Length: 353
Image (tube, rainbow, N blue to C red; front, side, top):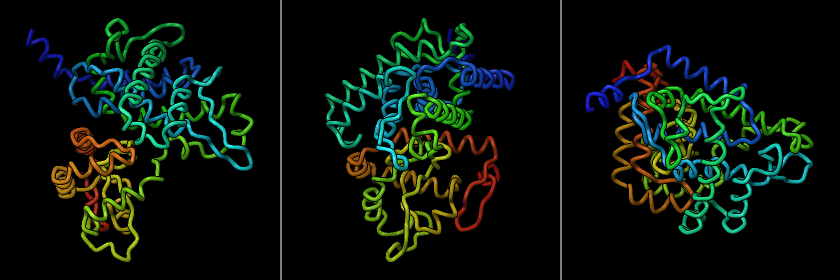
């Protein structure tokens, strides 16, 4: 029995199996039937959880529905707020072909009581109740129908029979989700935007081609000023990368693991950089030296980061952030990404390590 488990654990998908997996994802997004945006949210959610909770093996992975629900709330919170475009009155984007998607309605109820996601999370009873409600909807709708293609169910992500209490990703799926996360995110976001834009209930306004990508998926900037206020003290008014004083200088909150690699805000991932370093680093991973510096910073100031940044609505889970970083740097090594060494210097990561 141990040998069987060990075989599954290390039996990574072959190149042909990985290509077949991507083809299935593409078929679902192009040919599947969509009555709401839930399927896009589910694919993005399980991909992000595979990064946070999984490993690069061929093993199966159990995902709790409440963890998936938390990802749904993160994705839909901003999209449940009124959208403003040109001369039109602000309105809520319709995310289903019929009535408004239930999860949007539930989040809107929460937004009537809580101005921010941070405030909602501090009300443990309400937060847990909302997660349970969203989890039930996820289990009853997108989980059942995500793998439907041309009136047939192709169980290549998970078995419905084994996913009643928790979502059990089939062997090799976790590996593929982690390997192809950037492709899956981009495909899902594009199709999600297209669905919303072409929804007849939205066409009156959206026919003017507003920038939905910014509204729906760009990182939220409205609370980063307060993050900067905390980081300026934490970093003793110095740039995280070059160490120069930030007094009388322009600076920005930087995602240490770039947003383009992992599009989610987590408290431990924020660092403060001067304008020049922020611009030069851009969407690159930073070098091993900066990685170790960032990890040490997080371990040393873990409690301060949790106390201060969680109040602003950002998740502050040290282990989760470091697992994401492990995944990102492993991806970079395997795919020979360029990493930023500081200044104008960059090298292929495989040559640095």
